[in-house]
Image (cartoon, rainbow, N blue to C red; front, side, top):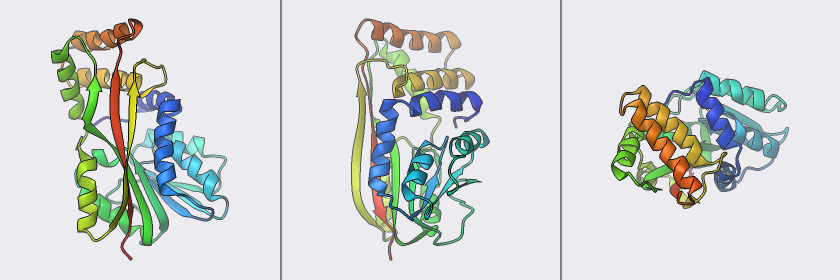
Length: 259
């Protein structure tokens, strides 16, 4: 698994505050349909960008509870959300949320469930925290949609194979609706959100992944450092030549808890 230390948190924050990932976050926000007075659970809240946006929307009569297992991420989230009195943060994981049953009206999770081994158990625990009829939004990437141009496809395959090792499932979106339906809950929508770019943007998803993938592959001895650096440098070179291309799709699954 990827370790969300202070440096990783810094890299993620740069991209998360950029236009590309802001639009991705907006897709989950819109699907959740937050309203004034709602109590909302943000599972895997990370650095708190979505948490803060939800806090502004629900207002002083509402409440947002952010849950994350990373101390560094929670520290960043607490700092970002310091102006809001209607936000609480808890250290915890999706399949063991430290909240009573029926606490929240709605729950959202963005790029968290792909890191969970026991998806069924995590779904059960998040839904346990929801009131009957509550809305659940889970957004994750499907790495079967991954397209990344390279003049060295063998090296690119090695880097992607390394990255595949850092999550529990790269194909979660195709399985999640059936998991929820099997438990008797309603699927309201599955909305694709594609991120495609022909430029290597300094605040985009691709450059963030390049840093993370290079560091992860080297740290876990999947490839030699020179190979990872050559892969990174190639992408920079392709971008300068106008030959960069990157595409990946996130799916927003919208469900409603059985009454």
